[in-house]
Length: 207
Image 1: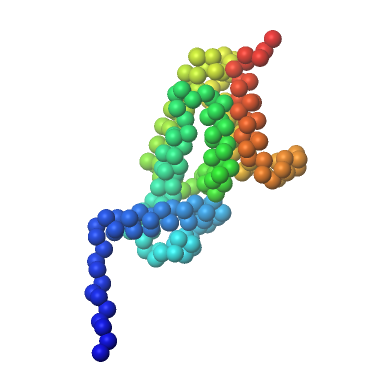
Image 2: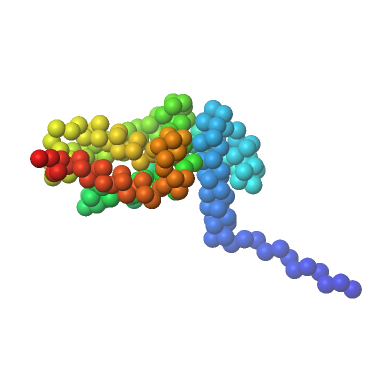
């Protein structure tokens, strides 16, 4: 006579919540890779689900579809991005941190770059949130200019755009970095150089 296996225990609510969070995170991670490689239009929900190892129906269940998943990624990017900055953090250090963040998360950086190139994926709500966030960045740069961190003849909005481009360059322009003679693992060195470049924007070294 063989022993019967014990009855299968139903997961507790906390366990179900943890499983759901793991599944959502797996889908987000997989979507970043697929969207960065193929853009919003070219990425397939079946490929995202396969990469995450889950049923593709869960994309609709958790995010409402492909566009909701894309919006969730960009929302999370904005939330994580804000942890890199603070009103008391010097601008050169912020630039260094942004650069290292891009080097450490190249797929996410490519996704952000593709969004600008393709012009697709973001919902109106997502676009409004993104615009609001970057208006905060512009206001912070104006405040820093008044405090002497930027030379008075610089346009803070133009500086903001240039800083984002500087920080993304290791991901957006790796072929040019190679042609210039930077080594494959130049991230830390480049981040330090970006910080030094930004330190000069105060104009304190003039004269």
